[in-house]
Amino acid sequence: MGGILVTGVCGRLGASLFEFLSSREGEVRAVSRKGLDLSGKAEVSKHLSAFRPDLIFHTAAMTDVDSCECDPGRAWRDNLEATRNLAEAAAALKARLIHFSTDYVFDGQKLSPYIELDSPNPLSVYGKTKLAAERAVSSLLENYVIIRVAWLFGVKGDFVSFVKGEIAQGRSPRLATDHQGSPGYIPDLLAPIYEIARSGVIGIFHLTNNGDCTRFEMGKEIIRILGSRVEPIPSTGAEIGFIASRPRQSVLSCRKYEESFGHTLRSWQEALRAYLKNTG
Ligand SMILES: NC(=O)c1ccc[n+]([C@@H]2O[C@H](COP(=O)([O-])OP(=O)(O)OC[C@H]3O[C@@H](n4cnc5c(N)ncnc54)[C@H](OP(=O)(O)O)[C@@H]3O)[C@@H](O)[C@H]2O)c1
Image (spheres, rainbow, N blue to C red):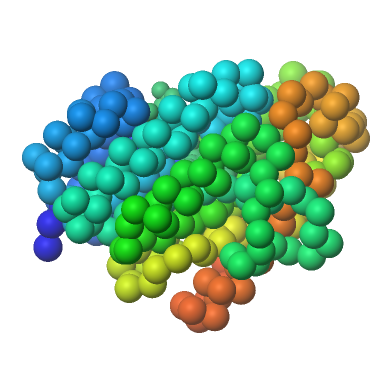
């Protein structure tokens, strides 16, 4: 068996995934932008031909939705061109590519959770670049999985840390009420990602914790669990100052994963309780 490559190792999901895989697999290597900028086609090809991984987890992306809106050139480079370079190099090596994507490929018009077969229609530059990357992966490779995740939490610098920081300062955070989504607790996603990767499945899978909420509801739950008296301020994205349009609802149905692998992830509330218990 060849090695495993993880991109985006300085990022939230990439760092956790690298640690998880390193304790289970023999040869796991990780790259960050400093070691390999994936937007350089020749460098990507050279790096992959030297290491010859047979499994690649591609978590690297430009993920700040508002920054993507302000700097679309960089967003297309980091999200589409980088993915295309990696997918081409993976195809040449016949490596399996596990690519990560987002609920923001949808426009939020659907009244029920999105399934993998629903037609995407992204509203933002971020969503457009991520959808184009999905299409590059599925057209360049036969052996691939696209895992759409959403609202990642469970590591430093996440939404939970933001709310905790506001509470610590005695401030009432403004939290959005006009977007319904599905939180994903990174430690809960790692084993399912590994399971998907090591199975022979091909195609798109949605993967989040069970249940959905608005950021306001999630913030209220954090504050309730922590026993704080701070009251968050219900706000619209426009009032908070979001630049990019977000889908009104982008709840992901994980039924395909559940039926394919026989288990359901716990609720986001249970995951949140576990996270807050661990981090204090
Ligand atoms: N975070 C979420 O809530 C969320 C939600 C839905 C989907 N996702 C998807 O899940 C995946 C992981 O997200 P994440 O939150 O873990 O990302 P993250 O924390 O923002 O980390 C992404 C990493 O990728 C690196 N990167 C970007 N462009 C690169 C390039 N051209 N070459 C090399 N490295 C590059 C970044 O480096 P720099 O810092 O130097 O740019 C950063 O370290 C992404 O595909 C994202 O679209 C995330």
